[in-house]
Image 1 (cartoon, one colour):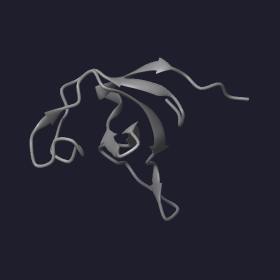
Image 2: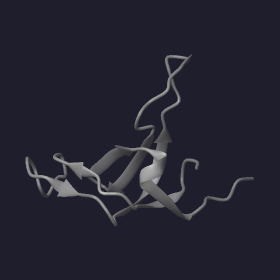
Image 3: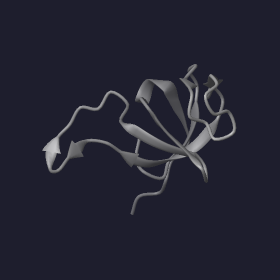
Image 4: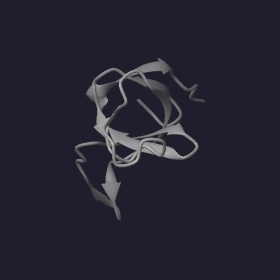
Length: 79
C-alpha cells in the first residue's frame, strides 16, 4: 500500500471521534477513503506504529487503521 491508494475498511473499527457522531460509538466497516500518510518513522528514527495508515474518509474526518483492516480498491500509478 502507498499514499494515494483508495481503500475500503473491511473489519469492524469502532471510533468515537466521527464528526457526525461525536461521543458515540460509530463503526467504520464499509467506509471508503484515501491513504494520506503511512507512519514509518518519527524525527528520522524507525517506528513500528500499531495503526500505521492515516486514511482520509471525508474532508473533516481522518482515522488511523492497520493493514489488516483495509482492502485496496484502486492503486495509484507510480512513475
